[in-house]
Image (cartoon, rainbow, N blue to C red):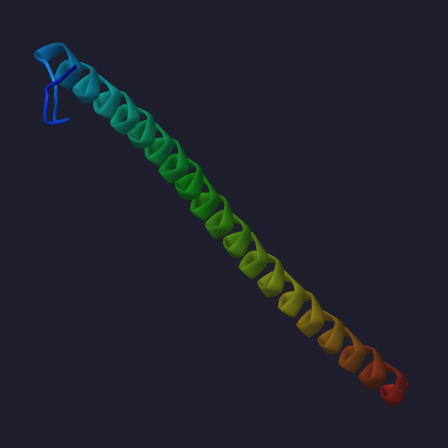
Length: 83
């Protein structure tokens, strides 16, 4: 970097190369962070889908059990009445 008599700074090739290296370093770092963030979000979505599927299965099982209980109660009531 040089400064002339009019206070204008001129950058040499080495200075520009340094800026380019710094810029590439920052871009690689940000890209790596983005990929990591995207991977974590994808894992969370997959987990949420699994949890929602599990909840739906549990709700179906609960409904089936409730129906069986209702049916058993009706059968028990009918057998008491028939005796």
